[in-house]
Image 1: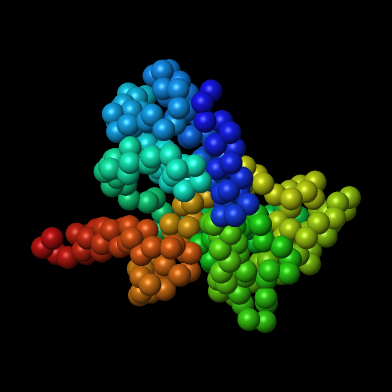
Image 2: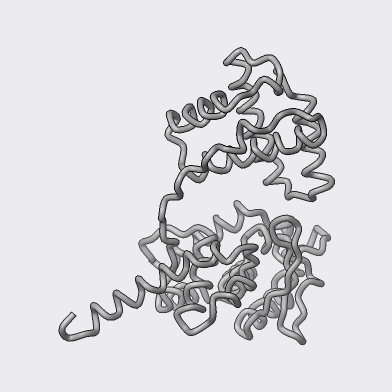
Length: 297
């Protein structure tokens, strides 16, 4: 397959110099390899031979596979970044993808829980056994901070400062930020650490805050399983995915008067446009409140 040496150089670059996360590196690798296989099928023998027509045809094949627009957009960005690197390092022309448009984003409003639903979730999952204490700390922390699950499972014991009520998290692109933590979450984490974590870690030793039933470092799939079990326990007829708690955190803040810039900073968004989707949610919430409450609505 053409371009494998260049691909390996690019992967080393984004991994070592740009310090991208393992998941991001894997996505780039997968996307670009898919493009290189496409070029091979099209009879292109060198990366310098790629023209705009090849770029357009590649995108067309992605649409034919009925991929989501977000996936197509990501693949375009991956190959565009690859060619930018090729131009800089190997003097290979990169015009083919420069003028290629990203597909228009599908306007999907993020799903979130209403405040009464969160109360029901918390109430149903109270308990004093080892795993209930851990689960409550996990739920409280996700809701209190709006952090991503990848950020949650990376938290170490030393990252939580109880005196200042903050947690240090490592976000996308290895960007570090400090997020405030409310009293409910701090108390839940403290109770979990004092009464549960040490006992769960009877045969293991590491510094990560959240552990599984055998004391090992909790994984993202482990968090998904825990949240699904908590939903079942609350008899809530809905699906849950970890990002819903992040959406809930942002929506509840805005509904209760927080400004958009502050929410952006708390979420760790690089651009305000990423945070603005939540204004659509709050507007819809206001509209429903009006329709339900106004006598002549």
